[in-house]
Length: 576
Image 1 (cartoon, rainbow, N blue to C red):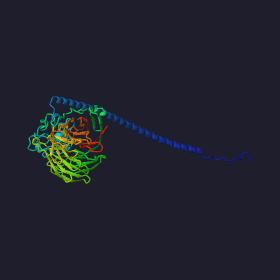
Image 2 (image 1 turned 90 degrees about the vertical axis):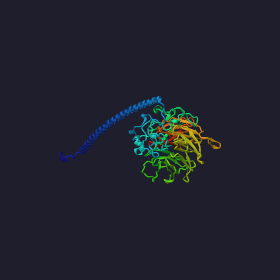
Image 3 (image 1 turned 120 degrees about the vertical axis):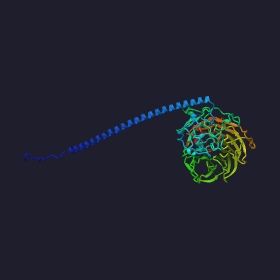
Image 4 (image 1 turned 90 degrees about the horizontal axis):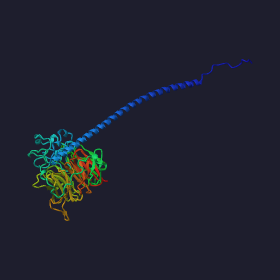
């Protein structure tokens, strides 16, 4: 063998490592490009976020500035209101007190402001509207109330150039609104042939004749209410309950016994003229223009809307002045401006009876506890007792006092035992009749202006009345071991409740007899202790006159209010 005998030389194979390195390099380059793209997107997002943060900071600064401006405006308004109140107090201190119908020129509402409110119903034949009550005349608070649309104003008054409501020289058949009916509750309007209207600043006819003390008894007013002109901001939290658009202020001079809260709020397309609970407290009714709305109290759901489709629409306004459930809750009675009382079958949504006979608007209705009779009050100067089963009139209770020129019946109530009917009227009187005989038993005199609402206390031994003189009165009925007395006018006025700043339009009592409730043109609801005459709390929860108040007869302690602001509200009052 040769020493040079070895294997031949061949070129080496490509390196596997180089291929792997190239692959890794390619992936690295791709990842680098992706990272650059992500970084670019991140920078873009950060720029957008910074821009949005700057916008939010600018918005926040604007909001804070608006809040500061609002606080300044609020402070200016409060200072202006305080100044005006001080001027008003000084003016009152230097002049005789205004009567319930008087209005200083500064308080008369401006026509340009009045169009912002909904149009109220027409009241009675040849009448203007409830201008004297639902307008801001005589009311020292807030914007003007409801006014008459031009088509409803009496032509004779239009010729006189008066667009606002005045008061007649002599009383006429009533067309003002009673207990909880229409929004323009007011003194009787002028009829054709009567003397010219007096200026709005003049008192209601006859109001100045009774300048002395109460004549129906020896009760005296309990002095100025501590709740008048209270600044809510100055009231400690222990003496108030409040919500987003309401506040209840409690009397600092009386022991606080209750707490108040808003339970339900019902909006309607027109003024709420009257409100009522069913006897079992399960249902709630509100009377409005042409329709009665019934709700379930527990759920606040609307059960039905009752509207008579047979009524022609030549007159678009037909306000339901009064509603009342039958004790079994199967029927509801409604009284309206067309002088008819309709008894509705709620489950069938149809009319069972239509009671006719009144010659003027129906102002008030009430069922007896046994459901056998229903009583109605009307501007025709009568109250009538009807048989519920037969739909016939049993008694016509006429007001025939020779010395009373304007005794239209504004409100009626039946005593818990069904034996008595109490009625308030425009002649400032409260009268009581026997339901079985139709005989008048008592007549209470003491209010200095028209009585707009009456209600029996739970024990049936006394009657509460509310008047345009801004007060409530509690009257003691004459009773003895043989039944009801017959000495007219001898029942004393046990209590006079003072504290409302304007007309008292509606009163109610709680089923336990512990409280009296009142609603007023001053937009407030007040709870009163009938034993002391002191107010327990004052509730501000409406933006217009509180036309109607009512309490739930059973179940949870509830009361309700209906107002010219188109709202019906259910409230709770519970012991603390």
